[in-house]
Length: 494
Image (tube, rainbow, N blue to C red):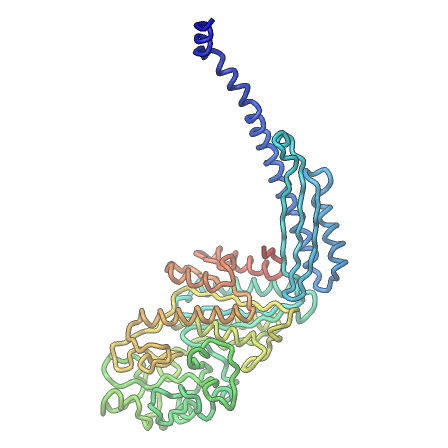
C-alpha cells in the first residue's frame, strides 16, 4: 500500500485538466470583463456627447435662469442619451457661474455588469463634465497684421483675402447692428496712429516725455518742431515706443505724467560718413565727431531732404483703423495695406491692446469687465523680430526704440541677434499683457520656417489650440475660417 501511494503521488497525468478547470473561471471573468469595460466606454462616449450638447444649448442664452437652464439641459441630455442606450443616467447637475460666465454640466451613467459580477463587481459608473463659456452678445476684435517688406506680392494678397473673409463672416453672423466691432493695426518697424492726431495732447506736443528726442542729448529736439523746420517733410503718423514697460502695456497717457505720453516718430539725420550710416539725408559738412554731428540741431532749419530716406524712414504702414461697426470701413482699410519695412511685432501687439481698450488714446472699446463682450485679437506675422545692429557710434539703425546706444530697449548692443532677442522678450511681455486683460489671443505664422518664432507665437496665444502655423495660402485661409468659427460659435473649454 505504501508503494502504491508513492507511485500515485508521483503520477502527473491529468494535471493539465485540473489546472484548466481551476483557471476556467478567471479566464471567463477576464474575457467578460473586457465586454463590460467596452460597454462602459461606449456609455461614457454617449454621456459626453449628451452633456456637451446640453452645455452648449444652455450657453447660447446669456440671460437664461437656473431653473430654465436645468429644464433645457435635461431635455437635451434625454434626447441625446435615450433609454435604450447602455447605462442609466444619474446625478445630473447643471450649474451657472455668474462670476466667469460659464455653464458646467456634470453627470454619471451606471451600468450593470455581465461577468464582473462573478467577482463582486456588480456595476460600473462612468462620469463626465462639460464646461462652456456662456454666449455673449457682442464681439470686439482687433487684427494685428504684419505689413513688412517680406509680406510683399502674393503673400500680402493672401493675408488680405483671408482677413476680409474673417471680417465678412463675423459681420454676416450678427443679430443686431453694432454687435461686432473690428479694428486694424498694420505693423512693420513702427505703427502709424494717423496724421489726424498731429500734436494731440497725448502725443507730447511740448516735448516733455523723457525719451522724446533723447538722441539729441537734451538739445531741445522736439520732433514736432523739427518737422516744422524742414521744407519738404511732414509727420506721416508713426509713433515711437514709450519706456519699458509702458512700451507694450495699457498705461493710459496722463497730461501730468510726461513719461506716460507718446511722441511722434522722427529718425534723425545720421552723420555724413560714407556708407557707415544708412539714414544720412542732410549735409552736416562732416565737421566734428559723429557725436557732435548727430546733435547738430541747426542743420534741420529750413532743410530739404537730399536723399531717399529722411525723418519718416521706417514709417511705412497705413494708419490704424479704430474699432468700427462698419464692415466697409474695415474692408477698405485691409485693401489699402502695403508691404514695406522690418518687423517689430511687440509694437503691433501693444497698439492692438490700446485699440481695443476703453482708455485713451483710442476709446472705442467697452469696459474690461463688461461680461457681455468678447475681446479678441488676431496676430499674424511672416517673420522674426528685427532691429538692425550697426558697427557705428549709434550701434543700430533708428526704430521705434530709437538707437541702441541710448538703451531704450534695455541693451546697448550692436548685435542684430541680441537686439532681436530683446524684441522677442518684449513680444512675450505684450502677449502676457493682452491675456491678463482678458483678451482672447489668436496667433498665426504665415510661411515661417524659424522654429523659434513659431514657438514664440504659439506661446503668445491664449492656449496652443489658438495658434495656427500656415505654410500655404490655403492653410492661412483655413486658419482665419477656424478663428471665425471659434468667435461665432461657443466652443467647449473643458
